[in-house]
Image (cartoon, rainbow, N blue to C red; front, top):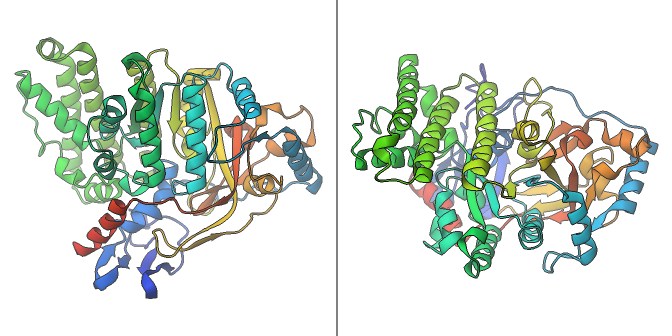
Length: 504
Protein backbone atom coordinates (compact mmCIF):
# COMPACT_ATOMS: atom_id res chain seq x y z
CA UNK A 1 0.00 0.00 0.00
CA UNK A 2 1.44 3.35 -0.92
CA UNK A 3 0.54 6.94 -1.60
CA UNK A 4 0.29 7.91 -5.28
CA UNK A 5 3.73 7.76 -6.80
CA UNK A 6 5.21 5.71 -3.95
CA UNK A 7 3.74 2.27 -4.59
CA UNK A 8 7.16 0.74 -5.21
CA UNK A 9 8.82 2.27 -2.15
CA UNK A 10 9.20 -0.20 0.74
CA UNK A 11 7.92 1.03 4.08
CA UNK A 12 10.26 -1.05 6.22
CA UNK A 13 12.43 -4.07 5.64
CA UNK A 14 12.05 -6.17 8.76
CA UNK A 15 13.88 -9.30 9.69
CA UNK A 16 15.02 -11.47 12.52
CA UNK A 17 18.64 -11.36 13.47
CA UNK A 18 20.60 -13.80 15.53
CA UNK A 19 18.90 -15.25 18.58
CA UNK A 20 15.42 -14.75 17.16
CA UNK A 21 15.54 -10.98 17.61
CA UNK A 22 13.10 -8.82 15.67
CA UNK A 23 15.10 -6.04 14.03
CA UNK A 24 14.54 -3.35 11.42
CA UNK A 25 16.72 -3.07 8.35
CA UNK A 26 16.99 0.03 6.26
CA UNK A 27 15.53 3.50 6.63
CA UNK A 28 11.92 4.54 6.91
CA UNK A 29 10.87 6.50 3.82
CA UNK A 30 9.31 9.92 3.95
CA UNK A 31 5.92 8.60 2.86
CA UNK A 32 4.19 5.24 3.42
CA UNK A 33 4.79 2.65 0.73
CA UNK A 34 3.87 -1.00 0.22
CA UNK A 35 5.22 -3.69 2.46
CA UNK A 36 7.85 -5.02 0.13
CA UNK A 37 10.20 -6.48 2.73
CA UNK A 38 9.91 -9.72 4.65
CA UNK A 39 10.53 -11.12 8.10
CA UNK A 40 12.55 -14.26 8.58
CA UNK A 41 11.39 -16.64 11.28
CA UNK A 42 13.05 -19.70 12.71
CA UNK A 43 13.69 -22.35 10.10
CA UNK A 44 14.15 -19.75 7.36
CA UNK A 45 10.44 -19.18 6.86
CA UNK A 46 9.66 -15.70 5.53
CA UNK A 47 6.77 -13.73 6.93
CA UNK A 48 5.87 -11.18 4.24
CA UNK A 49 6.02 -7.61 5.34
CA UNK A 50 2.51 -6.99 4.03
CA UNK A 51 1.44 -9.12 7.00
CA UNK A 52 3.87 -8.34 9.81
CA UNK A 53 5.02 -4.89 8.88
CA UNK A 54 1.40 -4.08 8.19
CA UNK A 55 0.37 -5.41 11.58
CA UNK A 56 2.78 -3.28 13.53
CA UNK A 57 4.73 -0.73 11.51
CA UNK A 58 1.89 0.46 9.31
CA UNK A 59 -0.31 0.62 12.38
CA UNK A 60 0.77 4.20 12.66
CA UNK A 61 -1.35 4.68 9.52
CA UNK A 62 -4.27 2.89 11.20
CA UNK A 63 -3.95 5.39 14.03
CA UNK A 64 -5.26 8.16 11.84
CA UNK A 65 -7.56 5.96 9.83
CA UNK A 66 -5.51 5.58 6.66
CA UNK A 67 -5.16 9.36 6.61
CA UNK A 68 -1.50 9.36 5.66
CA UNK A 69 -1.68 13.03 4.82
CA UNK A 70 0.16 15.54 6.92
CA UNK A 71 1.82 18.88 7.08
CA UNK A 72 5.59 18.59 7.11
CA UNK A 73 6.30 20.93 9.96
CA UNK A 74 7.24 20.41 13.58
CA UNK A 75 5.58 21.52 16.79
CA UNK A 76 5.84 25.10 17.79
CA UNK A 77 8.67 26.09 20.01
CA UNK A 78 7.92 27.78 23.31
CA UNK A 79 9.55 30.03 25.83
CA UNK A 80 11.29 27.97 28.53
CA UNK A 81 9.29 29.89 31.13
CA UNK A 82 6.00 28.81 29.52
CA UNK A 83 7.09 25.18 29.53
CA UNK A 84 8.11 25.43 33.17
CA UNK A 85 4.81 27.13 33.96
CA UNK A 86 2.86 24.24 32.45
CA UNK A 87 4.98 21.66 34.28
CA UNK A 88 4.50 23.52 37.54
CA UNK A 89 0.77 23.92 37.01
CA UNK A 90 0.42 20.21 36.27
CA UNK A 91 2.35 19.24 39.39
CA UNK A 92 -0.10 21.28 41.48
CA UNK A 93 -3.26 20.05 39.75
CA UNK A 94 -2.57 16.43 38.90
CA UNK A 95 -5.04 13.68 39.78
CA UNK A 96 -2.96 10.91 41.39
CA UNK A 97 -3.32 7.23 40.54
CA UNK A 98 -1.93 4.87 43.15
CA UNK A 99 -1.04 1.75 41.17
CA UNK A 100 -2.30 -0.57 38.47
CA UNK A 101 -3.13 -3.26 41.03
CA UNK A 102 -5.43 -1.35 43.38
CA UNK A 103 -8.72 0.51 42.98
CA UNK A 104 -8.45 4.20 42.28
CA UNK A 105 -7.89 6.29 45.42
CA UNK A 106 -10.87 8.18 46.82
CA UNK A 107 -9.37 11.54 45.84
CA UNK A 108 -9.01 10.31 42.27
CA UNK A 109 -12.55 8.98 42.14
CA UNK A 110 -13.91 12.29 43.35
CA UNK A 111 -11.83 14.29 40.90
CA UNK A 112 -12.88 12.06 37.98
CA UNK A 113 -16.53 12.37 38.91
CA UNK A 114 -16.21 16.15 38.85
CA UNK A 115 -14.22 16.15 35.59
CA UNK A 116 -16.57 13.83 33.74
CA UNK A 117 -19.70 15.56 35.04
CA UNK A 118 -22.32 15.53 32.29
CA UNK A 119 -20.27 13.64 29.67
CA UNK A 120 -21.92 10.44 28.46
CA UNK A 121 -19.38 9.36 25.82
CA UNK A 122 -15.72 9.07 26.84
CA UNK A 123 -13.00 8.72 24.20
CA UNK A 124 -10.21 6.84 25.98
CA UNK A 125 -7.03 7.13 23.94
CA UNK A 126 -3.56 5.59 23.99
CA UNK A 127 -0.15 6.47 22.54
CA UNK A 128 0.38 2.98 21.14
CA UNK A 129 -1.82 -0.09 20.91
CA UNK A 130 0.91 -2.30 22.39
CA UNK A 131 1.90 -0.67 25.69
CA UNK A 132 1.14 -2.78 28.75
CA UNK A 133 1.01 0.07 31.25
CA UNK A 134 -1.39 2.19 29.23
CA UNK A 135 -3.69 -0.80 28.76
CA UNK A 136 -3.62 -1.45 32.51
CA UNK A 137 -4.39 2.19 33.28
CA UNK A 138 -7.24 2.20 30.79
CA UNK A 139 -8.66 -0.91 32.44
CA UNK A 140 -8.62 0.93 35.80
CA UNK A 141 -10.51 3.83 34.23
CA UNK A 142 -13.01 1.49 32.58
CA UNK A 143 -13.68 -0.20 35.92
CA UNK A 144 -14.28 3.17 37.56
CA UNK A 145 -16.58 4.35 34.79
CA UNK A 146 -18.57 1.11 34.94
CA UNK A 147 -18.75 0.60 38.70
CA UNK A 148 -18.98 4.19 39.91
CA UNK A 149 -20.53 6.18 37.06
CA UNK A 150 -22.86 3.69 35.40
CA UNK A 151 -21.25 3.37 31.96
CA UNK A 152 -22.62 0.29 30.24
CA UNK A 153 -21.19 0.32 26.71
CA UNK A 154 -17.59 -0.33 25.61
CA UNK A 155 -16.84 0.32 21.93
CA UNK A 156 -13.48 -0.97 20.73
CA UNK A 157 -11.37 0.01 17.74
CA UNK A 158 -12.24 -3.36 16.23
CA UNK A 159 -14.34 -4.53 13.30
CA UNK A 160 -18.06 -4.03 13.97
CA UNK A 161 -19.13 -7.55 12.90
CA UNK A 162 -16.18 -9.29 14.59
CA UNK A 163 -16.89 -7.66 17.95
CA UNK A 164 -20.35 -9.25 18.13
CA UNK A 165 -18.78 -12.45 19.47
CA UNK A 166 -17.14 -10.46 22.27
CA UNK A 167 -20.49 -8.95 23.17
CA UNK A 168 -22.10 -12.38 23.40
CA UNK A 169 -19.29 -13.56 25.66
CA UNK A 170 -19.40 -10.69 28.16
CA UNK A 171 -23.21 -10.62 28.10
CA UNK A 172 -23.95 -14.33 28.48
CA UNK A 173 -20.69 -16.26 28.68
CA UNK A 174 -21.21 -17.73 25.20
CA UNK A 175 -18.05 -19.01 23.52
CA UNK A 176 -14.43 -19.53 24.47
CA UNK A 177 -12.81 -16.17 25.16
CA UNK A 178 -9.33 -17.15 23.97
CA UNK A 179 -10.77 -18.46 20.71
CA UNK A 180 -12.84 -15.29 20.27
CA UNK A 181 -9.86 -13.00 20.83
CA UNK A 182 -7.74 -14.95 18.36
CA UNK A 183 -10.43 -14.55 15.68
CA UNK A 184 -10.81 -10.80 15.93
CA UNK A 185 -9.80 -8.87 12.82
CA UNK A 186 -7.21 -7.06 14.96
CA UNK A 187 -6.07 -10.17 16.84
CA UNK A 188 -2.42 -9.12 16.45
CA UNK A 189 -3.23 -6.11 18.65
CA UNK A 190 -5.99 -7.29 20.98
CA UNK A 191 -5.07 -10.93 21.66
CA UNK A 192 -3.04 -10.03 24.74
CA UNK A 193 -3.14 -10.99 28.40
CA UNK A 194 -4.17 -7.44 29.31
CA UNK A 195 -7.23 -7.47 27.05
CA UNK A 196 -8.17 -11.00 28.13
CA UNK A 197 -8.17 -9.79 31.74
CA UNK A 198 -10.42 -6.86 30.85
CA UNK A 199 -12.95 -9.08 29.07
CA UNK A 200 -12.95 -11.58 31.94
CA UNK A 201 -13.61 -8.76 34.38
CA UNK A 202 -16.53 -7.53 32.28
CA UNK A 203 -17.97 -11.03 32.20
CA UNK A 204 -17.68 -11.35 35.98
CA UNK A 205 -19.30 -7.94 36.45
CA UNK A 206 -22.21 -8.92 34.21
CA UNK A 207 -22.90 -12.31 35.76
CA UNK A 208 -24.75 -10.94 38.79
CA UNK A 209 -26.71 -8.24 36.96
CA UNK A 210 -29.95 -8.24 34.96
CA UNK A 211 -29.62 -7.92 31.18
CA UNK A 212 -30.48 -4.22 31.12
CA UNK A 213 -27.65 -3.40 33.57
CA UNK A 214 -24.92 -5.42 31.89
CA UNK A 215 -22.00 -3.95 29.98
CA UNK A 216 -22.20 -4.41 26.21
CA UNK A 217 -19.19 -4.58 23.89
CA UNK A 218 -19.19 -3.34 20.29
CA UNK A 219 -16.75 -2.60 17.49
CA UNK A 220 -16.52 0.73 15.68
CA UNK A 221 -14.36 -0.14 12.67
CA UNK A 222 -15.36 -0.69 9.04
CA UNK A 223 -12.11 -2.33 7.85
CA UNK A 224 -13.22 -6.00 7.99
CA UNK A 225 -16.90 -6.12 6.98
CA UNK A 226 -17.02 -9.52 5.23
CA UNK A 227 -18.51 -11.59 8.13
CA UNK A 228 -21.33 -9.09 8.51
CA UNK A 229 -22.07 -9.12 4.78
CA UNK A 230 -22.29 -12.92 4.84
CA UNK A 231 -24.73 -12.66 7.75
CA UNK A 232 -26.88 -10.27 5.71
CA UNK A 233 -26.96 -12.60 2.69
CA UNK A 234 -27.80 -15.65 4.81
CA UNK A 235 -30.52 -13.77 6.70
CA UNK A 236 -32.18 -12.50 3.51
CA UNK A 237 -32.29 -16.00 2.08
CA UNK A 238 -33.64 -17.50 5.31
CA UNK A 239 -36.50 -14.98 5.15
CA UNK A 240 -37.30 -16.02 1.57
CA UNK A 241 -36.01 -12.84 -0.03
CA UNK A 242 -34.75 -13.33 -3.58
CA UNK A 243 -31.09 -12.35 -3.67
CA UNK A 244 -29.11 -11.96 -6.87
CA UNK A 245 -25.98 -11.01 -4.99
CA UNK A 246 -23.49 -13.45 -3.54
CA UNK A 247 -19.95 -13.51 -2.17
CA UNK A 248 -18.51 -13.28 -5.66
CA UNK A 249 -20.50 -10.26 -6.82
CA UNK A 250 -19.67 -8.54 -3.52
CA UNK A 251 -15.96 -9.36 -3.71
CA UNK A 252 -15.79 -11.11 -0.35
CA UNK A 253 -12.84 -13.16 -1.60
CA UNK A 254 -10.87 -9.91 -1.74
CA UNK A 255 -11.25 -9.64 2.04
CA UNK A 256 -9.84 -13.09 2.78
CA UNK A 257 -8.10 -13.03 6.15
CA UNK A 258 -9.93 -9.86 7.26
CA UNK A 259 -6.64 -7.93 7.19
CA UNK A 260 -7.37 -4.57 5.63
CA UNK A 261 -3.89 -3.70 4.24
CA UNK A 262 -3.96 -6.93 2.21
CA UNK A 263 -7.54 -6.20 1.12
CA UNK A 264 -6.49 -2.73 0.00
CA UNK A 265 -3.72 -4.21 -2.14
CA UNK A 266 -6.12 -6.65 -3.80
CA UNK A 267 -8.55 -3.85 -4.60
CA UNK A 268 -5.71 -1.74 -6.03
CA UNK A 269 -5.04 -4.48 -8.61
CA UNK A 270 -8.66 -4.48 -9.85
CA UNK A 271 -9.64 -2.82 -13.12
CA UNK A 272 -11.77 0.29 -12.74
CA UNK A 273 -14.86 -1.43 -14.13
CA UNK A 274 -14.67 -4.15 -11.45
CA UNK A 275 -14.50 -1.52 -8.71
CA UNK A 276 -17.55 0.18 -10.22
CA UNK A 277 -19.42 -3.14 -10.24
CA UNK A 278 -18.57 -3.70 -6.58
CA UNK A 279 -19.88 -0.26 -5.68
CA UNK A 280 -23.11 -0.96 -7.55
CA UNK A 281 -23.50 -4.33 -5.82
CA UNK A 282 -23.14 -2.84 -2.34
CA UNK A 283 -25.61 -0.09 -3.13
CA UNK A 284 -28.01 -2.80 -4.28
CA UNK A 285 -27.47 -4.77 -1.07
CA UNK A 286 -28.29 -1.78 1.14
CA UNK A 287 -31.42 -1.01 -0.91
CA UNK A 288 -32.51 -4.65 -0.82
CA UNK A 289 -32.30 -4.91 2.97
CA UNK A 290 -34.17 -1.64 3.39
CA UNK A 291 -36.91 -2.71 0.98
CA UNK A 292 -37.30 -6.16 2.56
CA UNK A 293 -38.53 -5.07 5.99
CA UNK A 294 -41.92 -6.74 5.55
CA UNK A 295 -40.32 -10.01 4.43
CA UNK A 296 -37.87 -9.92 7.35
CA UNK A 297 -40.49 -9.09 10.01
CA UNK A 298 -41.84 -12.64 10.53
CA UNK A 299 -38.33 -13.99 11.03
CA UNK A 300 -36.38 -11.17 12.69
CA UNK A 301 -37.20 -8.61 15.35
CA UNK A 302 -37.07 -4.92 14.51
CA UNK A 303 -33.71 -4.55 16.26
CA UNK A 304 -32.33 -7.55 14.35
CA UNK A 305 -33.55 -6.07 11.06
CA UNK A 306 -31.97 -2.74 11.97
CA UNK A 307 -28.69 -4.54 12.64
CA UNK A 308 -28.83 -6.31 9.28
CA UNK A 309 -29.29 -2.98 7.53
CA UNK A 310 -26.34 -1.55 9.42
CA UNK A 311 -24.14 -4.55 8.56
CA UNK A 312 -24.98 -3.95 4.90
CA UNK A 313 -24.05 -0.28 5.34
CA UNK A 314 -20.74 -1.25 6.99
CA UNK A 315 -20.07 -3.45 3.97
CA UNK A 316 -20.81 -0.54 1.64
CA UNK A 317 -18.50 1.81 3.55
CA UNK A 318 -15.77 -0.82 3.73
CA UNK A 319 -15.95 -1.34 -0.02
CA UNK A 320 -15.80 2.41 -0.56
CA UNK A 321 -12.74 2.57 1.70
CA UNK A 322 -10.91 -0.20 -0.16
CA UNK A 323 -11.83 1.31 -3.54
CA UNK A 324 -10.63 4.81 -2.69
CA UNK A 325 -7.87 6.21 -4.86
CA UNK A 326 -5.54 7.30 -2.07
CA UNK A 327 -5.06 7.22 1.66
CA UNK A 328 -6.45 10.70 2.21
CA UNK A 329 -9.84 9.78 0.78
CA UNK A 330 -9.71 6.36 2.42
CA UNK A 331 -8.94 7.94 5.76
CA UNK A 332 -11.86 10.34 5.51
CA UNK A 333 -14.16 7.40 4.80
CA UNK A 334 -12.80 5.37 7.70
CA UNK A 335 -12.96 8.14 10.30
CA UNK A 336 -16.49 9.04 9.20
CA UNK A 337 -17.47 5.37 9.22
CA UNK A 338 -16.21 4.85 12.76
CA UNK A 339 -18.00 7.98 13.98
CA UNK A 340 -21.22 6.83 12.31
CA UNK A 341 -20.87 3.37 13.83
CA UNK A 342 -20.54 4.88 17.30
CA UNK A 343 -23.57 7.12 16.78
CA UNK A 344 -25.57 4.16 15.44
CA UNK A 345 -24.67 2.06 18.49
CA UNK A 346 -25.64 4.88 20.85
CA UNK A 347 -29.00 5.32 19.15
CA UNK A 348 -29.95 1.72 18.39
CA UNK A 349 -28.20 -0.49 20.91
CA UNK A 350 -27.73 1.77 23.93
CA UNK A 351 -30.24 4.65 23.81
CA UNK A 352 -29.52 7.01 26.67
CA UNK A 353 -26.59 4.82 27.74
CA UNK A 354 -23.11 5.93 28.65
CA UNK A 355 -20.33 4.68 26.40
CA UNK A 356 -16.55 4.31 26.55
CA UNK A 357 -14.59 4.44 23.28
CA UNK A 358 -11.36 2.41 23.40
CA UNK A 359 -9.13 3.64 20.58
CA UNK A 360 -5.90 5.43 19.76
CA UNK A 361 -5.29 9.06 20.72
CA UNK A 362 -5.44 10.03 17.06
CA UNK A 363 -8.95 8.68 16.67
CA UNK A 364 -10.56 10.11 19.80
CA UNK A 365 -8.94 13.58 19.57
CA UNK A 366 -11.37 16.49 19.15
CA UNK A 367 -9.13 18.61 16.89
CA UNK A 368 -7.03 18.18 13.74
CA UNK A 369 -3.43 17.02 13.96
CA UNK A 370 -0.42 16.68 11.67
CA UNK A 371 2.10 13.92 11.07
CA UNK A 372 5.34 15.65 10.03
CA UNK A 373 7.29 13.84 7.34
CA UNK A 374 4.55 11.45 6.25
CA UNK A 375 2.65 13.43 3.62
CA UNK A 376 0.67 16.63 3.22
CA UNK A 377 -2.28 18.12 5.06
CA UNK A 378 -4.13 18.26 8.40
CA UNK A 379 -5.79 15.08 9.67
CA UNK A 380 -9.31 15.10 11.08
CA UNK A 381 -10.08 12.22 13.47
CA UNK A 382 -13.51 10.79 14.23
CA UNK A 383 -13.48 12.71 17.53
CA UNK A 384 -14.19 15.93 15.64
CA UNK A 385 -17.42 14.52 14.19
CA UNK A 386 -18.41 13.08 17.55
CA UNK A 387 -17.75 16.40 19.26
CA UNK A 388 -19.91 18.22 16.70
CA UNK A 389 -22.75 15.72 17.09
CA UNK A 390 -22.62 15.25 20.85
CA UNK A 391 -21.33 18.60 22.08
CA UNK A 392 -20.35 18.59 25.76
CA UNK A 393 -21.58 15.02 26.08
CA UNK A 394 -18.32 13.91 24.41
CA UNK A 395 -15.11 14.01 26.46
CA UNK A 396 -11.68 12.98 25.13
CA UNK A 397 -8.86 11.58 27.28
CA UNK A 398 -5.40 11.32 25.73
CA UNK A 399 -2.44 9.18 26.79
CA UNK A 400 1.25 10.05 27.25
CA UNK A 401 4.30 8.27 28.62
CA UNK A 402 7.90 8.91 29.63
CA UNK A 403 10.41 6.17 28.86
CA UNK A 404 10.49 2.43 28.25
CA UNK A 405 11.57 -0.37 25.97
CA UNK A 406 10.31 -3.40 24.06
CA UNK A 407 12.29 -6.65 23.77
CA UNK A 408 13.73 -7.84 20.48
CA UNK A 409 12.03 -11.21 20.96
CA UNK A 410 8.52 -9.83 20.29
CA UNK A 411 7.09 -8.02 17.30
CA UNK A 412 7.34 -5.19 16.36
CA UNK A 413 10.95 -5.64 17.49
CA UNK A 414 13.34 -3.90 19.82
CA UNK A 415 12.30 -0.41 20.83
CA UNK A 416 13.89 2.09 23.21
CA UNK A 417 11.90 5.13 24.26
CA UNK A 418 14.00 7.91 25.77
CA UNK A 419 12.51 10.88 27.57
CA UNK A 420 11.32 13.31 24.90
CA UNK A 421 12.13 17.04 24.80
CA UNK A 422 10.31 19.11 27.39
CA UNK A 423 8.46 21.20 24.81
CA UNK A 424 6.52 18.10 23.67
CA UNK A 425 3.45 16.89 25.54
CA UNK A 426 5.04 13.60 26.59
CA UNK A 427 8.25 15.37 27.59
CA UNK A 428 6.55 18.00 29.72
CA UNK A 429 4.39 15.40 31.49
CA UNK A 430 7.52 13.32 32.14
CA UNK A 431 9.08 16.24 34.02
CA UNK A 432 6.21 16.65 36.45
CA UNK A 433 7.84 14.04 38.66
CA UNK A 434 4.86 11.77 39.36
CA UNK A 435 4.83 8.21 37.97
CA UNK A 436 1.11 7.77 37.28
CA UNK A 437 -1.50 10.51 37.06
CA UNK A 438 -4.22 12.36 35.16
CA UNK A 439 -4.70 16.07 34.64
CA UNK A 440 -7.73 18.04 33.47
CA UNK A 441 -6.52 20.55 30.89
CA UNK A 442 -9.73 22.57 31.20
CA UNK A 443 -8.74 23.65 34.72
CA UNK A 444 -5.75 25.72 33.59
CA UNK A 445 -5.91 29.37 34.65
CA UNK A 446 -7.13 31.72 31.95
CA UNK A 447 -4.48 34.06 30.63
CA UNK A 448 -1.65 32.08 32.24
CA UNK A 449 1.60 30.98 30.64
CA UNK A 450 0.43 27.37 31.13
CA UNK A 451 -2.72 28.08 29.11
CA UNK A 452 -0.60 29.65 26.38
CA UNK A 453 1.64 26.57 26.33
CA UNK A 454 -1.36 24.25 25.96
CA UNK A 455 -2.73 26.40 23.16
CA UNK A 456 0.30 25.88 20.92
CA UNK A 457 0.98 22.90 18.62
CA UNK A 458 2.91 20.22 20.52
CA UNK A 459 4.63 17.02 19.54
CA UNK A 460 2.79 13.95 20.83
CA UNK A 461 3.97 10.35 20.55
CA UNK A 462 1.97 8.17 18.16
CA UNK A 463 3.15 4.59 17.59
CA UNK A 464 6.67 4.86 16.12
CA UNK A 465 6.30 8.47 15.02
CA UNK A 466 5.07 11.79 16.38
CA UNK A 467 1.88 13.73 15.82
CA UNK A 468 1.59 17.49 16.23
CA UNK A 469 -1.58 18.88 17.76
CA UNK A 470 -2.89 21.57 20.09
CA UNK A 471 -3.42 19.83 23.46
CA UNK A 472 -6.16 22.10 24.81
CA UNK A 473 -8.19 21.70 21.61
CA UNK A 474 -7.67 17.96 21.17
CA UNK A 475 -8.20 16.58 24.69
CA UNK A 476 -10.06 17.41 27.87
CA UNK A 477 -7.96 15.20 30.15
CA UNK A 478 -4.55 13.59 29.71
CA UNK A 479 -3.03 10.65 31.58
CA UNK A 480 0.64 9.81 32.05
CA UNK A 481 2.59 6.62 32.76
CA UNK A 482 6.26 7.05 33.61
CA UNK A 483 7.47 3.83 31.96
CA UNK A 484 6.04 1.47 29.39
CA UNK A 485 6.76 -2.09 28.32
CA UNK A 486 5.40 -4.33 25.58
CA UNK A 487 1.91 -5.70 26.14
CA UNK A 488 1.91 -9.47 26.51
CA UNK A 489 0.66 -11.48 23.53
CA UNK A 490 -1.08 -14.71 24.44
CA UNK A 491 0.58 -18.02 23.64
CA UNK A 492 -1.97 -18.49 20.86
CA UNK A 493 -1.04 -15.14 19.30
CA UNK A 494 2.66 -15.99 19.37
CA UNK A 495 1.96 -19.34 17.74
CA UNK A 496 -0.06 -17.60 15.07
CA UNK A 497 2.78 -15.27 14.21
CA UNK A 498 4.94 -18.36 13.71
CA UNK A 499 2.30 -20.13 11.62
CA UNK A 500 2.02 -17.14 9.29
CA UNK A 501 5.69 -17.58 8.51
CA UNK A 502 5.37 -21.34 8.08
CA UNK A 503 2.69 -20.92 5.41
CA UNK A 504 5.36 -19.45 3.16
